[in-house]
Length: 340
Image 1 (cartoon, rainbow, N blue to C red):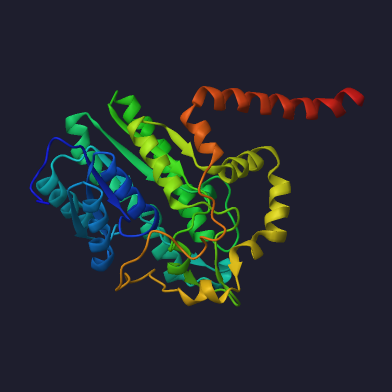
Image 2 (tube, rainbow, N blue to C red):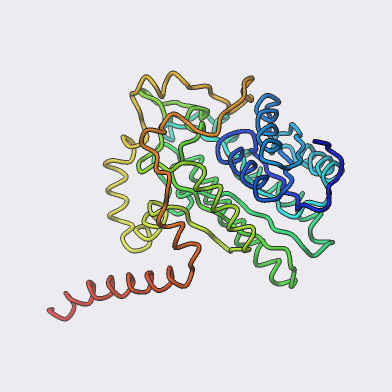
């Protein structure tokens, strides 16, 4: 397919588009009528993701850029618009993690995780707004995480960065609303997802390798949530029952969750499987020289459907069920009070 601008299809730009959720999302949008501009560091991964987009029926282009480099992102956006046309939606999907207890993580690991996972979102949002605000149109979608609703041990840098992404999203959204802007800013919080993220994360673990805590979901579910959030201009989409339960538990009984994560949180994130360890390639400081797949090493346990996503598509039903759940919690709390 030609890379000249095609204005009959909307244009999506996505950072972190060469692997995992980003690569999966790019192909999904191409199947559903979008052209896609891919941004990531590694040429090999970008080429593979671009092939996915074209097989799915979309036009696409790829630009190698590090999201921590604001000027490089600006050039990437300019090239995408030159080749595909105005960007209608921008997904900040790049992220990186370093596993280890806080005192075992070197300062440079902490800084790099923050630069990519948080400041990469800041840079991407600024680049997108420079284009969307003058047009008074467009959607920016930030990829958060379940750990933005409740932080977990062994991932203090990543958890903190995702909390920062959530706070940043709320602050900038309020500014856009103050200006009566028609640019929409949303966030999607994925659960544990079967992607190469865990194989690519830096590890300072004494024993074992990083793994997603169960339950694990396939990335197609998250890509579908991103599409829903963009096309319906949702404020926030929490993906999977795990994510919703984690956020609710942290609100209702944070002390109990402290205890549970202190007792079990580290073991749930470490694998001693040779299969998981064999596929490791840390990419915190440099991109992979080979294409990175959509799926990770945990497909045997990953769920391919999510009841929570069905509720996300029916917000009225979700609100009703949430209300019933809240009434149940209040009833449980009121019972002991009446007996006292």
